[in-house]
Length: 489
Image (cartoon, rainbow, N blue to C red):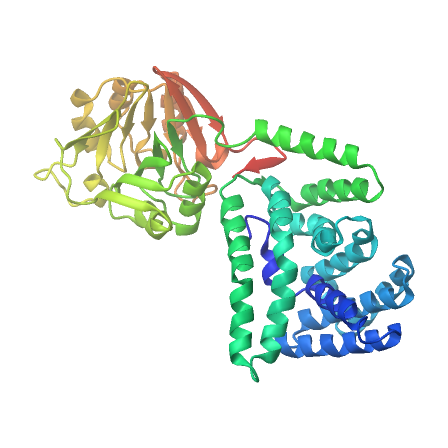
């Protein structure tokens, strides 16, 4: 729901009060001719609604906004109700000054302002309340969440028709449930398809990328500009601005287009992903943090992992395992039971394990790392785990030039430079955390790789990296760029 921009639908807000009050006002016209009586009946209904959802601070502030809407209906002049909105804001802040710092309060105020100012301009009227509330709340939602989902606008438009029947019928069903449970159950059954529809829209729209903001202020300004243009009748300019933002961000999306190898930015740890296409990948280590690992795989669009390689037991290589398993199918796992000489082929990628050797383990956990080469028609890769120089020296005769080298032990100073010369990689990837206390990567390691004319990629500097390989010709994309307004995720 959050990624699709629909979280506001699962929280009680001024929009819910607006829907209930609008429905009751409409229904009361068949019983009372005088507007005052209708407003009294509506106020009673809203009191029951407050009791139903419990009078928490967020509900009470939404109720205050609803009172403003009732005033607007009573005066029949939406703009004249703006002073009432100001009075309600002042009353809430005086009663609880901390509400002034609560984003939820800002959203309630903006939703109410949207219902007063924008909803009267929207046709059809049945869609006006949710659309108006969504548009006016957009700047703050973007600033708080830290990302913009281009699909959230469409998702909200698709979900909007289902919000009103769910709110109204659900309210009635809850009120009569103590006295007429069968009827209440029947009403709930009637609105189940609407709830299912919203859930489907949320799942569908969440599959699409979002723009992750460097700072929420940028998103607030952009969204506020679009809202202002819409409100003041400059729809063409608003659409043009929105298209411009989306186009610029699309050009800077990560990962862009086809990619073969990616390295996640998961802090001080290792996590490399080899693309098998169709949302499938080989994963080598999973970093220390499940949330960061899950986020990386989600960003890369990976839902199935035929082979998971956990090189050794250290937490910075295996700590994120639960994040990998979240909503993904994991096939074979290599961990502690694999020795040199093991071979596997997945799609067009040949995997050859070079280390460990069962007879050569010296008790150092780093030297129990699974070190393997990956060979495909488009690239060759050597992933070294955390093996130390004595083991690296033993592998010199077994490995030749590779296109990509996942540098051993986060680029520490413990390297066999003869192995580096033998590998002579085009690209060297160092997975390392910003400001780590280990001194990784070591200047001597960077210098040696640079002298070999390798392109050195560091996750602490470059963020997550993606490598596109076509017949051993490599191109690189970094997720961190100083000029980037948005990150695509």
